[in-house]
Image (cartoon, rainbow, N blue to C red; front, side, top):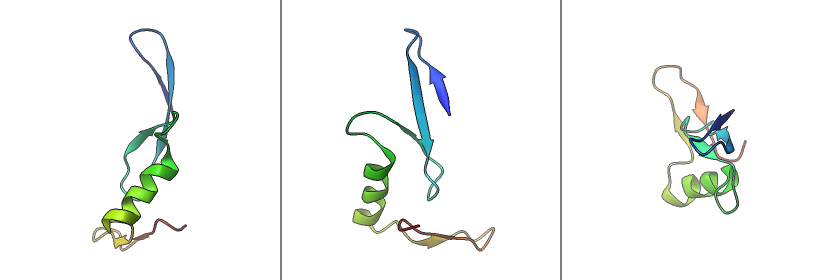
Length: 59
């Protein structure tokens, strides 16, 4: 997904399959860094109670 800022710059967003966050695709701020954050904080593996789907950082 992409969006355009008020200054006219195009920014790419990656969607985290663990939490659904839109992560800006830029230097030092990427989806891999975001998923490492999930692993470090212990929020990497969880089961969605509504769907029963297991969300894992290593997939």
